Length: 149
Image (tube, rainbow, N blue to C red; front, side, top):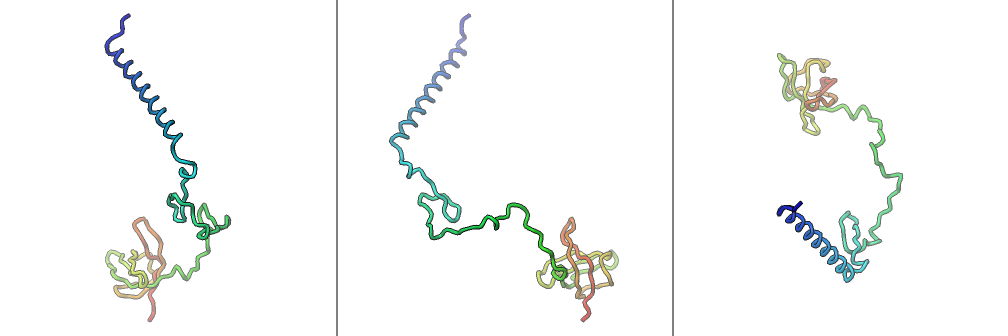
């Protein structure tokens, strides 16, 4: 059976690409022979983690103990309950709807407060102490108490 013109053309292209591939391979081999020395091919990492052609300075070496490396979650440190209590000012409170916002005196962050988390009634510009819990929309103030001044 006679080969079609298309089949012959594809076969020629295959042979040509094999020939080009072999030529590139030989060219790479020749370049590697008269190429760089082993020392020229080495790459170093400096103290900042960047690749460099110069070896690192041994005077800048820092020894790290294997015990100090933490790969997982850090060990749990017990939290002082006094650190959780914050002080703030009620910046907005709607009695009819039963919610408002408290602005922290230190960080100036705003926390949502609901009437269910109040121990006593509050109004705007009252100084309060509270704890923060993260809700699905942000910080929520809980255990809100008025500061007697």
